[in-house]
Length: 372
Image (cartoon, rainbow, N blue to C red; front, top):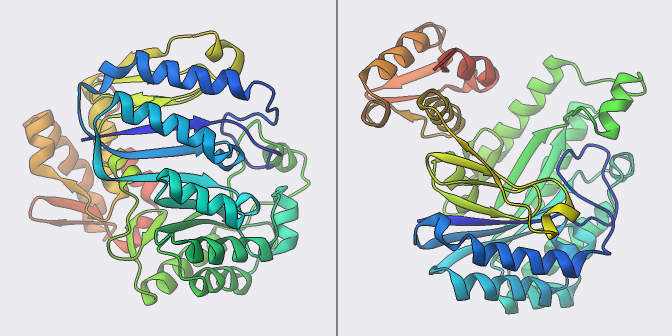
């Protein structure tokens, strides 16, 4: 089993927080689509014939592409790869792109899961983020998607805006629940270096939310979604039973995937490959750079991704893959967190407790290898 990720870097406008590779120019769209299809063909052997269980169009803003362009990419994938019947095929999109006609066309070409970047239902904060849509457009987009026939819809929300109150965040969560979506991803607003938002923080134009309030917002999120029947299956992701993101879950479980497009990453279980973050160079045929992972790096990734999930780390699997020495190392370093109640160990399963969720990065760091 394997997955394919397609990076669509085109955006109509750039949001102030975004650190992903993207461009607001559509001039090279046709050349880029041709390069995507060439890469899909040239790297056919990368996944070693594994059946494709998930296809994910990410960005950027994939909904900037006409449905026929998306169809042509899907056709190439189906012609080259062994795509399983019932594969999950996700498209990320901006709410104001999701017209009734566009949604119907997406269904027609085989998209069966939508991920919409709503971020907030507060119009002032949407304006602050430089998002293109309004709260009303976001609500309409989800309702129209359901009316068109989509029954697997995810939305993204952000919390921790400057001056945001806990009540305002609760209202955002409540609005999401009223829409009846099946999946929700929620992230604290990040001030990444090189983004406009990061520069605003450096200049003192905005202030980060206090840690204690951010913690309260996260707790509010967990409690409200649990009350509404959602599984908290990964640190930032919640789903109704049966609606976990199969594509993202495969990342956390170490399933191989091919990433095509400028800036996309690939992983085959032992080696990572990175495509160049340049539209022009990618179109010219620049080959991905490869990085052979050491055993320590693979162990670190096993720990990091496993602890992010509600299933945690299977210590028997860890020993089978990495040996008794690294299993002992993991348990020894986990002991203080078990004693503090931040980690739970039941049999061969080691996982974060609710208390541990709030300091997960520190715990993961303690369990990782310092050197190979």
